[in-house]
Amino acid sequence: MKVFVCVKQVPDTETKIKIRADGNGIDTIGIKWVMNPYDEIAVEEAIKMREGGKATHVTAIGLGPKARVSETLRTALAMGADDAIVIDAPEDVDSFSTAKALAAAIRAEGEYKFVLTGKLAIDDNQSSVSQMVAEFLGIPHTTVVSKLEYADNQVTAEREVEGGSREVVQLSLPAVVAANKGLNSPRYASLPGIMKAKKKVIKELALGSLDTGEGDIRVRFQNFQLPPEKPAAQIIPGDVATATATLVRLLREEAKVI
Image (cartoon, rainbow, N blue to C red; front, side):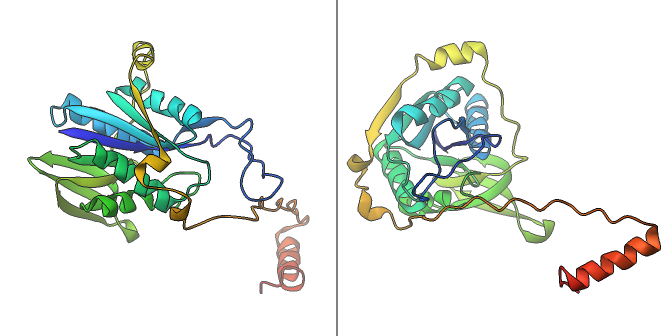
């Protein structure tokens, strides 16, 4: 069984974000890019499936500026993926066009018994690409999965739902599953793995070759703004009774919350 893993490149959480001069996005110069953490979990799960004899081949697939996204795909290859596909696309493609292109690329490869993704990307938090990939492929889907069991032509997934409860669902293959924390602990790429990754194949596709273009971008963002600086904390002096009385007065007269 061939497994596909969709991975996204996102800014490192420690990167200081700057807004572009036109306000319609972030300035990508100087950003440190990494693989989306939830996608790392998906890559690890695919590799574990192959190591456990449940899969025969793992293909990582990503979309974005080719030269940059290929670096993240090399990370997936260093972790143990067999090969990779990069879809060269502009920075501003939305979730709909991303999912349409990913699904078209996966379909073009032939067999797609199982597709793994992360539950969301930590840059935009939209949590929608995996569901739309499944819809474009016309196959079952589930998300926020923290436990998976595999059997012939089906998977049993345990997923988190609201209120701390868990839900167990069974899906017939082919299917798309979006990974959550707790499913596994991603491995670090070893030095031999990194060296081997340099020789592995990354297939290059153009966005236009997948019947996806400007007309498929349904959402555009503008007027990006950084959150306002937090005001300095105010320390109220005095004993407990005095400080409490002062706090109540400030909450009533200045903050106007009581």
